[in-house]
Image (cartoon, rainbow, N blue to C red; front, side, top):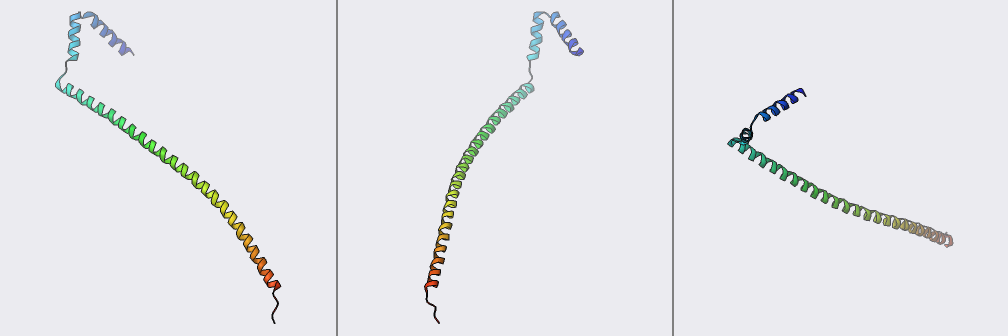
Length: 123
């Protein structure tokens, strides 16, 4: 905290002591770049642009895959509902067939009893 105050006071004193032409000259010296600094800046910008493009590409792939998964889940849900309905129908049909089978077995037993009971015994 104290260091910041001292640095700010020094910069303020230096800026007051410079004339306007000296201030312009000092600002111009900050703007002068060497070739290496310019090359580094260009490479940094290329890396930043590449990173942004890759970021948008990843997001678009994520959204596409998310959309595809949503479609697959919807299709599976519809298929699951159809299979449950078919299962319910088959369960009802199975119960009806079991009832009919039981009824036919009773009728066969009654028919056998009537044949056995009405038939003459042979000696």
